[in-house]
Image (cartoon, one colour):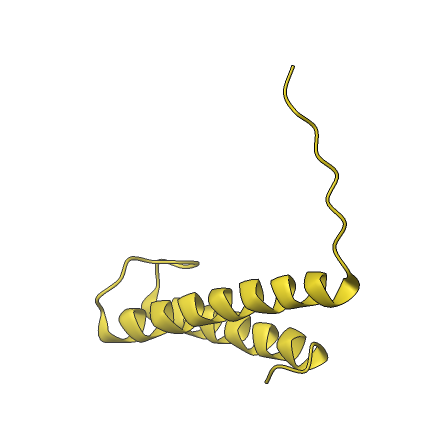
Length: 73
């Protein structure tokens, strides 16, 4: 049987982890968008390039909205 550990994290710590992960996801989406626009990437959401670019932009906008909630953007 494995070792069980209990870890207590304050809410500020949890928020910092969430913000860091959201920022990393936003960066990845923005990088994917740049590559897709240049034609240097495979389809992410749609095979059609224009649809894919639009969907990536919607995800980026949504991520920024969530980050604003956390006071990041």
